Image 1 (tube, helix red, strand yellow):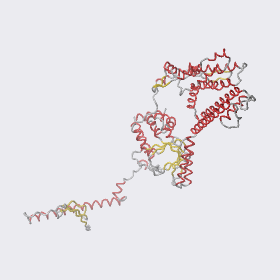
Image 2 (cartoon, helix red, strand yellow; image 1 turned 90 degrees about the vertical axis):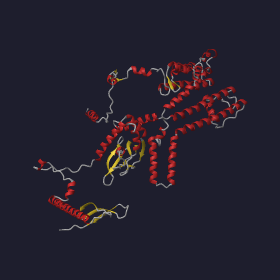
Image 3 (cartoon, one colour; image 1 turned 60 degrees about the vertical axis):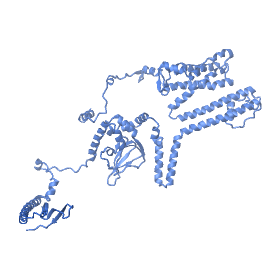
Image 4 (cartoon, helix red, strand yellow; image 1 turned 90 degrees about the horizontal axis):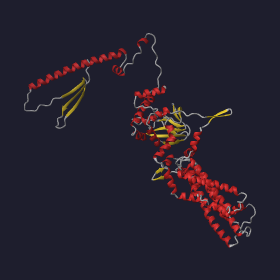
Length: 626
């Protein structure tokens, strides 16, 4: 309450200072706290969320945002599992004799579950997915359904759920009638895209997916080899499968050696075997090379940042070796590269943010740096939008242990905000005494930034105690921002004056001794003005006697000057009366500008040459002593 009262008092005194607190609204006043729900079980009582929250979470929305809704991604994963079941086991069951009358009911049950997933996706989820039209997000139920029904994806989804399983009643349980289930490939690729968008390390999933492609191609090749062996006759030639051991593993082993072109396989005997082997070799070279190239791209994309960091560091080291930079400096440069990469994962954050729109840059800057800048007392009460604009202009710089952030005597043009780490302010006679240690959220150098005159020099050395990450804001940038926020500018200028007064005061001197006895009744004697001391030129009676003597000398000098001037005027009048000259031009008289004392005479007389004006004459005479 005291802090709030002081804030409002300052606001009444100075309307420029404003409180950062917002006024309470009617909605806040009417808001009621939620009731707590507890569950009693035996002797324990624990809190649980109400059933209503569970139902709200499980409720299917009218429209689904495929880019941000995690529930939609989870559903796509379920449909992808059903799709992979069909892709892997339909060829297996069709070629290998694994489906028997004794286990047909289990295969049939799994097929029904997969078909239910397909139908739910077709009828419930896909008609609710939002889409873009001319840049607008369409979330209308009717429009979304029309868009889905007019797409190629809908046609393939309908074909994939056609019940060709009815032919089981006429031709028996043949898995080939379910081959249309493998047409739902669009959902599989959509799931891959959505999952990569939400994963932190998507390259790991890309490697797993590429490996899965390779295993699936080998699976199909193993099925084809068993079909070819069955067509030729099991064990009929040395090339075909002889029917011994685990049929699937033996055929899969043959497929691996064929596609990877390891060699060492039996030579084909018949024309069918030769053609099959040739096609298998061609297909293996093409598929294997494509997968290897895709794997290289995935790994290269995952390590692109690391390669860029290594390239920059190698180029810098090569440059330093070319110009014979000292080993100590080279070690510090390497340390800076390693720490910056380990702490940020990149060398320059601005390069990544420059590719984004300004609003996205602001959103990221607010989430990352607003909490730090908001703690700075200097910017409290300023316009929030001004702080947002300032966040986009801040530059992040990493300082190594022992680096000088600023030195005493330098011209201050920047302000520093500590983002991470600590800095020490040094002072004392030798300049090595730690005066104060500043931590995250502290500000220094703000006086040089806000001073109107400029040219302010640093008053102390500031050194990084450890690895320190600082924000830098220069004076030019701040002036460009404050140009659009005059109220915040007034507030900052007022705070700058307060800072200059508080930090510009001299250190307190020794305490003044209070008078004792009767002298304490009259108070302390005020000090004699300095100007009066200079005029008197001494202390006590000596100084006053000198002052009176000078006054007497000045009066006598003035009287003598007046008497001499009168005598000269009389003499000049008598000469003019005795020698009148009407024809000749009278000589100009000497113009006396004034005399300061008896020993110094300053006069102006006309020059004998025409056009040269007047001549200044200064005569110095010694004073006659009486």
